[in-house]
Amino acid sequence: MSARLAVITVSYHSGRVLTDFLESVARSTVVPGDILIVNNATDDAGVADFADASRSIRVVEAGGNLGYGGAINAGVAALAHRPEWIVVANPDIELRPDTLSLLLRAAEEDDRIAIVGPRIEDAEGVFYPSARSAPSLRTGIGHALFAGVWPGNPWTRAYRQDRIDTSLPRDADWVSGACFLMRRDAFEELEGFDSAYFMYFEDVDLGQRAHRLGWRVVYEPCAVVRHEGAHSTSTAASSARMLREHHRSAARYLRRRYSGWYLWPVRVAVSAGLEARLLLLRALAMARRR
Image: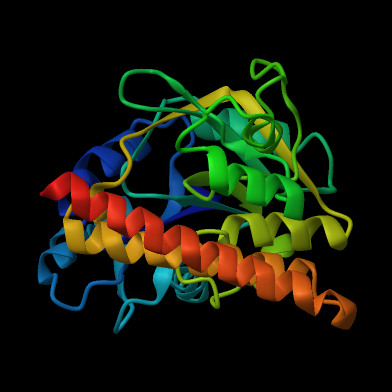
C-alpha cells in the first residue's frame, strides 16, 4: 500500500455501488494507504459493514448530510496519516487498474499542478466532458436556457469545450468532482472545498480558487474511470432536491464571480432568471409524471 495516497468517497445510501467502487480501488496498481467512506446518511447504518482494517477501509460518520464538499473536507480531516495526494471520488465510480498511477504520473510532471482529472465515461463507454471552462455570465445563461432544448447551442459548446480534442492532455479551468487527484498541500492552502456549496459547483469553485493562487488544473485522458451516475438522486424527491440545489449553487457561484457593487443589477437578474428556470423545469417534470 502507498502511504502517499488516500482515497475519499462520500456515501448517501450508496451501498449498492460501494462494493464495485472498492473492488476497483483494490485492483489498482497503486493501492492507497487509506480509503475513507464518509457517511452522509444518518439512517444508513449498513455503510459501517464496508469498514475493513485489513484493506485500510474506514467509515467516517458525518453526523448529518454535509453535502459533497463538506463531507470530503470531513474525510480529509479524519485521515490517520498525512498523504501527499488525495483522490476524491464518487462512490459510483469504477477505476481502471492503471487509473491512479496515470493520474500520479501526470501530477508529478510539475510541482504547480494541484488537481488532475481523468477521462470520465458512462456505463456504455460514452465520453462525459469532465474538464470545462469556467462559466461566464454569457455562457452560463446561454447554457442554462438552451442546453435542454438545443444541445448544440454555442454557449453549451463553449462551456463543455466540445471543439477541443478530448484525447489530448491539457490545462482546464476545472475538472469534475466525480473523480480527481489533488495535491494535499494545495488542498490545505485552499482550505478544501467551500462547504457553502451543498451540491454542484463546488468543483468549479475549487478549480477557480486554485488558479487564483497560481496552481494548475490538468485533464489527463489516459487515466479513465467509468461513472454510473445519479445513484443517489434516483427518486422523484431526491431529483427535485438536487435540481433545486443545482440552481442555488449556480446562483451562488455567479454572484460571487460578479461581486462588484456596480454589478448588483446583474446579480438580481441572474437570481431571478435561475429561479424562473427552476419553476419551469419543475412544471415540466410534473407534466411528464401525469
